Length: 69
Image (tube, rainbow, N blue to C red; front, side, top):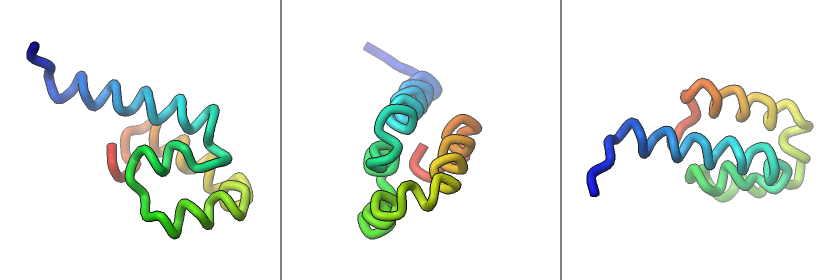
């Protein structure tokens, strides 16, 4: 079965959005997209960088500019 790179990227973005929405406080989207472990732990301990980082991550995922997409 052949799949286009665009379809794979769209699936990856959809999964990242769902993880951001439901497991964002536990950095689920960040673990999935391969962010550095230290930053992920800091994200969890600071409640998503005091919620501001969580919102910024969501905007970057939705716009497709988050590293790892």
